[in-house]
Amino acid sequence: MNKKIAIIGLGKMGLNIGLNLKDKKIDVFGFTDTKEGFDYAKEQGLEVFSTLDETISNFGEDIRIFWLMVPSQAVDTVLFSESEGLAIKLKEGDIIIDGGNSHYKDSIERYNKLKKKGINFIDCGTSGGVEGARRGACLMIGGDKDIYNQTEWIFQSVAMENGYGYIGEAGSGHYVKMIHNAIEYGMLQSIAEGVNLVENGKYPNVNIESLLGVWNHGSIIESYLTKVLEKQLKNYPNLDEIEPVVDDNGEGAWTIMEAIEQRIPLSVGAISLFERYSSKGKDDDANKFIALMRNGFGGHAITKKD
Image 1 (cartoon, helix red, strand yellow):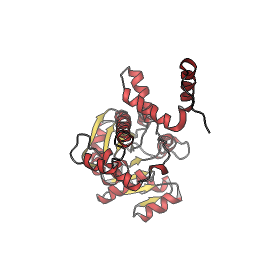
Image 2 (image 1 turned 135 degrees about the horizontal axis):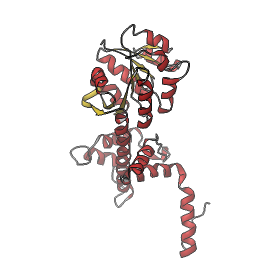
Image 3 (image 1 turned 180 degrees about the horizontal axis):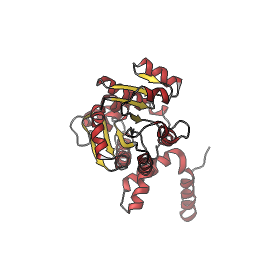
Image 4 (image 1 turned 90 degrees about the vertical axis):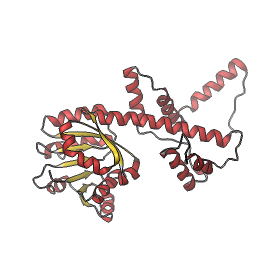
């Protein structure tokens, strides 16, 4: 098999995976349907096409391999659109890798639909953020083992050393990535709450950036995330400029629902997810109701707006 691959979706992650492969002397090219993405990819030195037909024809007669890096809600459109979907354009033996954050049940369904057409589907959980995509990601791969064996060179090229592995049958790669993200939620919450207690606790004059610098040299909690926070505090020294809103990409909720379905506790993940909802003001009325009840049964004060 010739080492040739197309990246579908040239956002921050897709483009950086493409550039990562290019650095490894892989014959890589990309597809995007936005002018901004097309122009920027060209500026970065990546060969890029603006139509799927051009992208596909660039393979010649080889088995064609496509790495999808599009939002989860767009995957079915890319694959199964009646006029432009890859499923109607590809041939038997071609390979599609979904490297985005898709729900594992969707990945199983896509695998089965494509299998009927003789098209191979791999689900690949991708971790490491933009820097990982560019310099070496962590990859969790699910699908048929023989197809994994055919494409392992891709994962080896994209991942950092020892940073990829075959997880199991279809859906398993995205399953463990989903759980990985719930673990991430809990770690982020714990670090943030601890640093907040330091900043607003008994010794409020502690320099948080300096403290993180100490923790990031040999402490038990030294981690990629504490290093990221130390770096970000250099970029954003004034926290007053930042709204206290934490977004979520949906995978935390998927994982909590999976834990409920399997009747397996995931307490920290659930609390961390609900804290994100709270940050968006979705507990504001609940807090008002609590204040009203405390006032009603105990005469506790209600704080009114000016």
